[in-house]
Image (cartoon, rainbow, N blue to C red; front, side, top):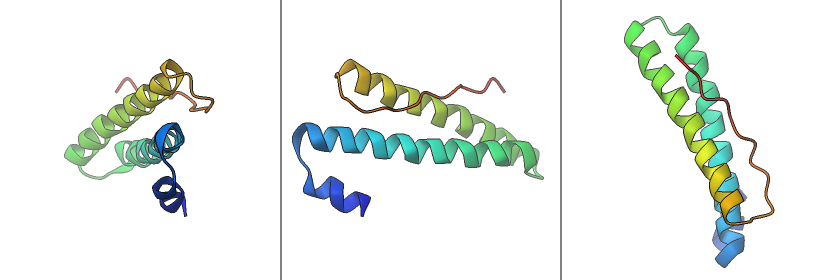
Length: 84
């Protein structure tokens, strides 16, 4: 349904929908990676997950900054970047 909305949009509307959808996508990835960083059995998986959590949070913040810079009336909540 969300992708159909994106496909049906154009211009600034498409940009805003894209930024919102990507922010939520990366936010979900950060949460999943954080869980794995804390609970995975393998130390290598924990390290990878910790990097992924950090990178996903940075990307959410970049999306929020882009929306703000462009003056879009959308709210993308910034994330705290983990310091692992």
